[in-house]
Image (cartoon, rainbow, N blue to C red; front, side, top):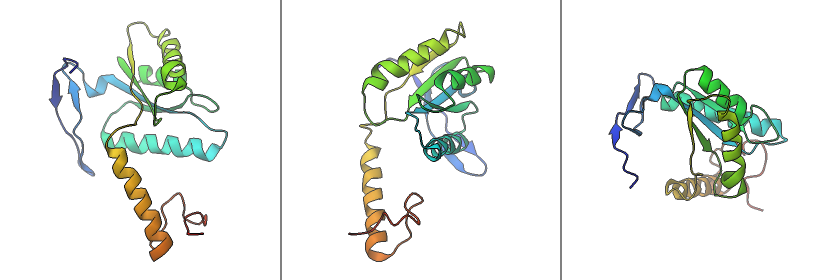
Length: 173
């Protein structure tokens, strides 16, 4: 246990209902946190746009007012640009959340170095690089859901997911 006391204040949005029950550490206000969700970045523009759309949807559904997408390399916006945007919007703490499954060189070295470089431009602003997504237990459910959905599409003709629709990829061969 890290010793932080959490307060559980669900975010309630009139259109979406309760969307986040994230307990934040005592003294941390949702409005003072900037969140940067960073992926690797791709040479494929469509992949970068999908990440950016996901981040904006996450922002809307979770109720954090300061959320920015970033790509570690190969595309913009960069971690530095996203960090700057968070601070310009009023963030006193910037949380950089890697949209990566497992620890590796990018999480161990690259992202922390890019975050530290971005932070030097903003004295007094704190930052944190979170752990990658895996091995979060909900990933088990996500993998199970994806397998079930693709099998239902391939075998029973259920609608394809948004990624496979119209591609012919989700079929038994």
